[in-house]
Image 1 (cartoon, rainbow, N blue to C red):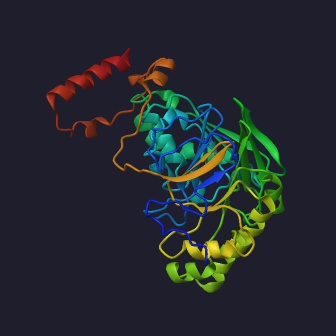
Image 2 (image 1 turned 90 degrees about the vertical axis):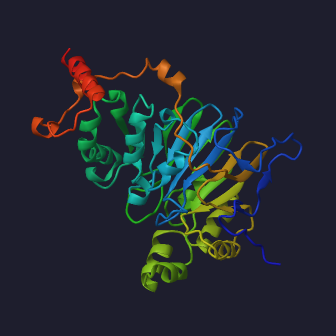
Image 3 (image 1 turned 60 degrees about the horizontal axis):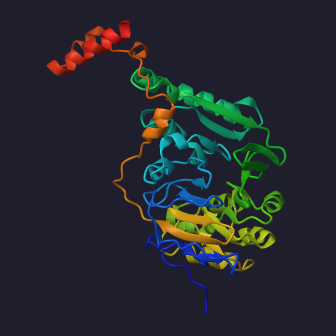
Length: 395
């Protein structure tokens, strides 16, 4: 009998193995059927991986690429920041001061478009320290993370001029951490966490995957890539391997109107087909393999699984947005987040207190030209407050 995945968007994860037991003799942690954001503390030796965006192009059901990894030591890491991923982040009850460690695999816009959005929302929602953005250098200086961060500042000049003085200036800082992607290398090591970058083939030079290791646990996020022996080498003995698995070319012809040659160029020579992903998974045998970057819609998951099963018979999950995976030494549990779309962004008063409070400096504010200011219809209470601001700024 054929192995079947559930239909998408039913509230069930698209997985062959909701629970992978690593240690049958252990007392296993009991997880609710769905993850209610902010409701579960992590054990010290535990990683929670949440898919913020899994598809291309972005649709209401799927943002572009991005994954959040929360660790039992309190650290939060965000891998890629494609369009729509910040919207997902805002429903997961993680304060913005924790959205400061970004690791970018490459610079296609579907992997970086929400970096300015994180920059903006963090300014007004409690981030009082720099965003640290890690990424590879490119073939020339204009193609690396340092140039990208500099260009975000340029892009946001009007935005920043309107906000400075209204908001704490510490929220306006970004720091680029650039490395040369010519070999496997450690690019982050702190608080018991090691992140190793490794080069992957994807269009041109300058794309990487990452391996995160913490408390004897490991997750590989390979980013966008063709199947590669380098990925296989860096994904040995990994607990969770997140690797792209594209839809068959016919899906893009039928759903998006691409030509057959265009669909094959993209799906076969820039990305990874199900049959090719099977080769990577079979040579790494991860605790569980996760595919992402496919268009998930009714009827699309099963052909992907069928293609994988031509060469890989292990546990597999096809990521939808809000797929969540808890990794411990004893088990790997795959669920869906119980999304509450009207939840407010959470703040952290204790963090703000530790940082010395929010500092507002009206002297940094830029105002309107007088001829335009004179057109504002006055309200007595507001005019009094404006006068107070002017006096504060003059001091």
